[in-house]
Length: 217
Image (cartoon, helix red, strand yellow):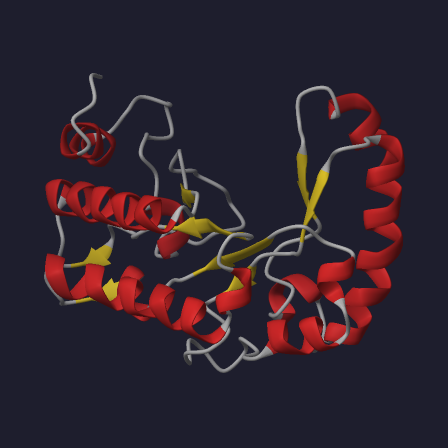
């Protein structure tokens, strides 16, 4: 952490401490809010000592912490962190409001969009005190096993971005580029979320998003 902050501090002002720590995929074992606090407190202090003015973000949540997503995703993990005083050591919260329809679905454009929007609303209903301290740090739709085409996905993304903007919440799409990683099998949906192909050229989804937002390519 010290090496990263010293090298990148002039360009990076916001530091997220790990990712989706409410899942064993990233926490490696059963997620524990108390164990995460043991990491957060000294790491946050270190970042702030090396980069005065930098902001610290809790490791973003998989899901919205309220709705059921998968058996391995621990709900109410953020509530446990708040009870342990996490926001005394962090400035920002991030979450990933995926639904199952982002991966495998026969739903149309409206149903897919509304499912995520409802999850976002439930998060802010549960944690209104975090309304001005929360980012949506990851959301997207895998193209492989859903009913939506490129143009529909682009419109859904634009809808989510505008909706988050109305709340004053930054939103980041997962991810910019499709990838071909041998650790991910050919049917793994995480390979096909990109706005660009493996060759880094903007794909049809990216072009559809640009069009839906009224931007120039």
